[in-house]
Amino acid sequence: MQTFDSTRTTTAVSTALLAFALIVGCGGTATDAPAVSQSVPARSPTSEPDRRVVVLGDSLAAGLGLPESEAFPAVVEARLRDRGFDVEVVNAGVSGDTSAGGLARLDWVLQRPADVLVVELGGNDALRGQPVDTTEANLREIVRRGRAAGARVVLLGMDVPTNYGSDYASAFAAIYPRVAEDEGAVLVPGFVREVGSDPDLLQPDGLHPTAEGQRRLARRLVPTLIEALDDR
Image (cartoon, rainbow, N blue to C red; front, side, top):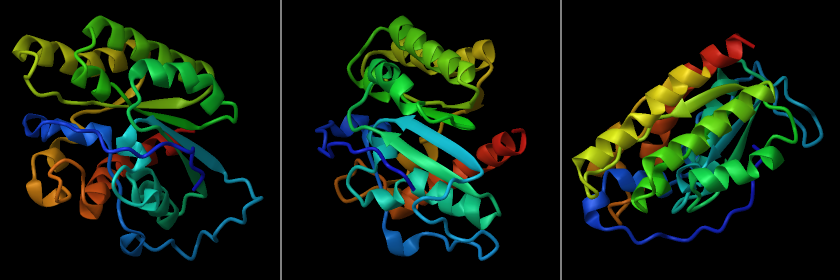
């Protein structure tokens, strides 16, 4: 799996943000990765896959705290290949990134065409209390540019705690279904909800997913990607 270099620094987040802290990083262990099906031979470094998926995200995608080889993009690639897809999943996760940061580097990320663009962004915006309309505008533009580049766009919905008030949390959560519907993206609602609400799926720091937590995120995403790739 191709990856983009990123600085892996642990972000100090209060325990009140436990369920939401997943959006700022995680990873897994290589020994637990699903085996690749023998029906899809491993690609050589110079071969081109039939399909290409790009995950534009923050440190949840980058794999903060665990080997990047088991962040959910890597697990997703293994599971898709195990199901017969000759696919490359590019991990374009950068720790601490915001929706504005993702938008700023999107054109560079899409220099090589992608069949599917997965957008895992916005969580750090909420942690910093960024205006909801600013985050929404950035996500809309990311979806529009992704579609204009020929990619099917999958938007991962994020939940936020009520530290900035219930009105902010509700307004933020509403961004994702609205953008998905208006801009023609496929929505995966509450992407981190299961993992963030289960302490057994978090590392000892109580903030970042275990390897099993990463596998749960991959399991959540794979069916949507199968549908998206089948439509290409």
